[in-house]
Image (cartoon, rainbow, N blue to C red; front, side, top):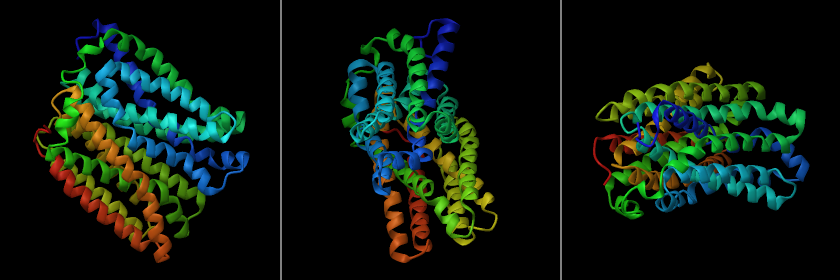
Length: 392
């Protein structure tokens, strides 16, 4: 445990603040889709303009991730996380105000905040829990997935009761509570303790082959995840399943991911090499893709469990490897920035290319085969990144 905590109360406050911060990593993003029809109807948006709300956020996740190392080098890692939480609260509130400028501007602010927090979290684990990287990676990745699932579940009931604007703005409350509880930790640690050399690790890591392996693994697992997130319900409906069942199956995948994120990092974090875990996660993801390709209407619940476990294990391993391969919090922040930047840029274009292949071919065979090819590349680069080699 980091020495900045003052006894048991300080340790508990650190852990609670860490968990609440992790729960904020996805609600602002995952909560848009359930409200999209209400937002489009209220503001008169077409499908492209409605989809652009999420696209703006995902693009910010990719392009603005490098802000985190620069910010952490100036004010410290704990204060960087606090800044991310505060920007998130502001962005979510602005996004819910009337007008298109507020809608897209608030989405961009929220995406910027999540980009900063995404990058900071692996380094927070490295800084505060250096001897328990695996278990605390499991905690925060599970919170990430649970936050997405929870937001998806509560947005529609909230919108029915209070309207979509209040429902969308409700995510700000969680960010504000997390910021309040994280503030003592942010104020305790002076900026100068973040790491020597400031931005130097960021430049140094770009010259390492391991960095590029980690970047490719992070990007490809993000690509294969967001493809299915975007298109699974449509694929199932085209296979003859009713719309509500298609939505439930997507929810089942999210639940299976939580089971994987809780367990895989704990076991993999204590191993010298993460290659066996990468192979297992990729094999399950490939099996899930193959099931959707070959028999989408036959035992679809089985394919969703297999796919969810594989995808949950993959994202957990990608974030764990980032924390393990870099030697100190500053280097973890830099590696996290370059890996997540590439990952979310790929994630933003993946569903678009998948849909284009569907449009060109007229069915889902070619797109799913391309997805299986991406899974194979994920396996290759995951094995390279999972070897016990330093990133610097």
